[in-house]
Amino acid sequence: MKTHNFAVLLSIILIGIVVIPSCTTGDTPNKETETISSDINSKTTWEGDKTYIIEKNNLYINAELTIEDGAIIKLMSGVDIILNRDGNIIANGTSAKPIVFTSIKDDNYGSDNNNDGDNTVPAAGDWGYINLNGSQNSTFKYCKFLYGGRDNSNPATVDVSSEAKAIFDNCTFAYNSGSLLNNIYVGALNASNASAQTQITNCKFYGNNVPVTINAEMSMDNSNSFSNNDLGNKCNGIFVSGSSITSDISWLEDEVAFVVTAANLDIAVNRTLTFGNNVVVKFVEHSTLTVSSEGCLVNHNGPGVEFTSLKDDERKGDTNGDGKETSPEVADWTGIFIDVWKKSTNGEFADWNNIYYNDPHATAK
Image 1 (cartoon, rainbow, N blue to C red):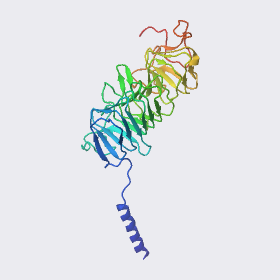
Image 2: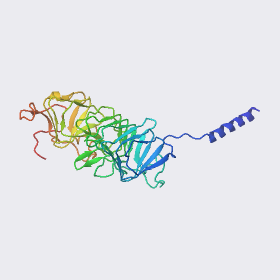
Image 3: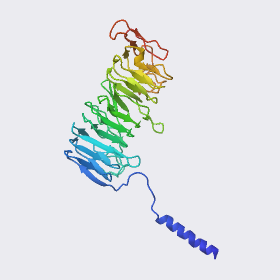
Image 4: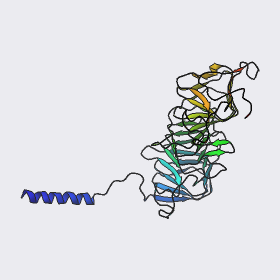
């Protein structure tokens, strides 16, 4: 009798296992889709339970666009999203329901929206970029930006251009382009012409060619990440654009190096650049950092702080993305010039023991 009851109980359990639906992670593949083919000219909301297919090559945002948490935005080949100064994007996702900007070929979010099965797979450069174009109030929190940066005219995925001001917090930039274009580094997140008030915090960068470029006037804290399960970026660094620093700022990131890309980066009198411990600053060929006194570089001799050549892979890894094709040499860059009276001839180059591969008196290579 006990054996019979056990068999019945076992049958019920097995039937229950069969009929209970399995749980899945990620997005529901049957989200409602909406095609966007017209500019945003009035206050608009994109809903979190939808997938939006952007098919207009240049989608202009002329008013505030709010994107709800969980929304998926898929962009066709050649598509750019361009804001004007009256346009803003307010995209506040959550950890559980991020907002995703990705390629139409990306079946991992939403569903197979280009209806080609496995015939295509997403890749860097599938779509163009989001150009903030001087807008002042855009916010991106818990957003994912994937497979953007279409062409060599602008390989950025998000371009914070024309002194636009924006907040990026807990965002992911992965598998995007970014590149060295006409000797100018352009990051997947390109903030080289952004307002100094632009904030980049708690963001992840991996699988990009060039992860991020910033304006020299911007501070960077130590909250961002530049790898995911050992996958970094080809040129793994924070590339700094601009020739002057006119306010007090801080560079605190210690996972990757900061890269000074200007021929001369000048810190104004009575202004400071503060380094966190273990910060490495690399310099492109023949580059110089000019200050009026050692006091302009706060913590320049702190634990682990180093100044070196862009080719120096021993310090914070392969920042120029060329593997072992190049190695650092003396006179790769010029040095740190302490100009007592600023632009006088009475200054001297720093000879600190944490400066590597520079030579202020080298003959031209």
